[in-house]
Image (cartoon, rainbow, N blue to C red; front, side, top):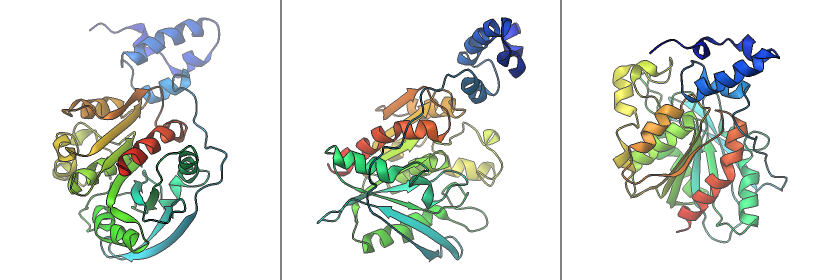
Length: 297
């Protein structure tokens, strides 16, 4: 294929005036055709990521936080938060898995504001449920070569803790963003439809091959092959699945391939957005409504 002028446009050319405006238009076409590296940056520079979502200005649902020493995580102290509306009956629960460099606090307050999005959902008549987040470190929610196993921490330690706090873990969902989006799909598939009702993933961090992954996501190629969610869509048969990803997200091509691998297409889809909280907040109401619908069924 001949090398086009659009394929060698520099960021400086995009930012200057005059003729640079024409160049930016050509660059936009190149970005849409995936001819340029750094597509996520280009979408952001060109203003193609859509409007930023806003946390609703409502009183958040009540929250309680604590910590426990995790055997599965080799003695690490693991923090957690449960955000739940008041209820006279045990509530179903969505376990929320954070992204890389995040923590159990990432879903609350001024971060993603899920405690406020959940309050707005219930106020509007949506089915109530709890959102429970937990610290998983940066190990991509599966067992690592050093013995750290954040996935087992969730399934063997955190779920019993949630039951002890009065939540109905027989009505269970997983949700998460980026690394946590991958984790939600991965753990949902491991537990399957006998234990999981729904999985809602935001911008899941998935790759087509082991060679595409960054250092630290997987121990090696064997670890990638053992834990990738691509090719394992059937593990989620019987589970309600929603996957949302921005068209300006670097993970979008792999996520699209993943979604295309389902026999029945998941809910959600692809719209303008980057790999950032502006997009995740915009998609939060739809994700929470999806979780509420399937947890209450």
